[in-house]
Image (cartoon, rainbow, N blue to C red; front, side, top):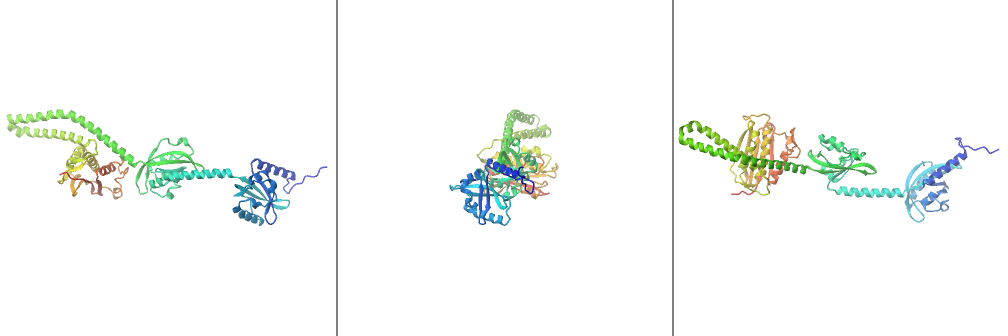
Length: 502
């Protein structure tokens, strides 16, 4: 009769425990996991079991390791920590845990390892079972990734474009250019939704373009939107996004560029294009009108001479006023055509002496349809010498300011609304052109920003008109200033400097 099977307190047979231990050791061997068992002799734990994988990791044979002190195989700077772990184990404090450390192989090679300790009872004595994993490949991968990320940071931190890394719509990295673009410190940007700094009208557009989980859904072309700078300015930008892996997780890399100057240039080009088209139209109209206009003018003059000869009394009393009105009408047509041509001439880098009063009057003639019936015009022109400048650009500035002033009046009333245009000298070589109105005025909180691109308080328009005026003024070597008081009106002053041609 066979010997009864011995069982432990939990009812598991010794054979079953042995089979389980063998299975665990075989699995560890297949996984390349080193296993050691150590007893404590009261001085230092010593190996009583070392599997082949552990011996391979430690660079020795199992025979060389058996009975050896555990700490001997650890790197010198790690041995004290191992001794402390052993001391804690003797005091009953040690618990199963995972420790990253390093061992020194017999050939002197340093090997990073991951070690798991577990306290067990073998044959009535406390022992330590240790599982060792060679993590050289993992460490090399981590180091390569660290170097890659370091190069990535060095590259994008030196990049002139604003670059941010987004995850789930939140900024996880910003380069110095992006910090400057938003006008906020990196601490205020990181871990915040990028849409928090976007113009309210464009926030939904931005939120839809940062899904790192769906690379196909990322926009394939740059997205244009507006951000709000820390000082309140609205800045036009465009962003191109690509999917990347950042710190081991999917993310979106966004390249953002300030397009404010480009937008202004585009608006200026569009204005120049419109003015050029207007010039072509004016030239065509002038060609078609000038001949019949000249014919009509000559015949009116012929009629005047004839009536003065055959019926001088009737001419003076009856026909004279009608003919004078006809003469004025024909002169008006000729003036309008001439002014359209002068204001729509292509701009040139060359400048020549011009009479600024004539430029202002030409702009007024073109804008008269927007002024007539809405406000009365008051001219206050001082006697100033000709100024060397570009009359086309100057005319564009005055025309825009006149249109803005005319549109500022809430109601059309020539008896109340006044549009004042002035010309004066403020120095030996400075001419000041003013366009003022007695309209509702501009609130103080808006006044400091009216020359900013895209800033407008109107329900229509892009807010580029005054920005273009300031740019044109700068191109002429001048500057445009504004004064306003709510309820009393607004005055724009264009200061232009240049040598007088006497």
